[in-house]
Length: 102
Image (cartoon, rainbow, N blue to C red):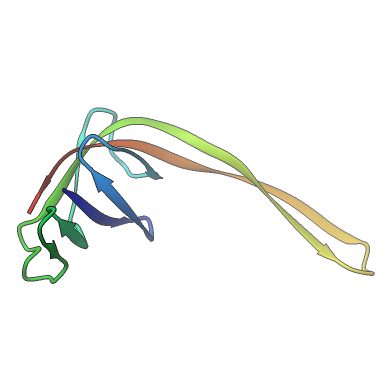
């Protein structure tokens, strides 16, 4: 069984016991997080309509908080003697998928 969840403007395909890395959410380590799935597939049929997903949920546990890799952004304007380098590190969370119910 697998499901597709949406968080932080991105969609993630998850199965039970998977580790996923998402953008920061305000939960402490060890707390549970519930997501409403966009789509659930149990191996025989796929459910993606809102009526069929009313009771569906994906329960995840927060494992750790960390910062992602540094992304460098470079701005350059030709013939203007202008350039600028900016770095960014996104705050991330590791989640472990505990259960998927439909």
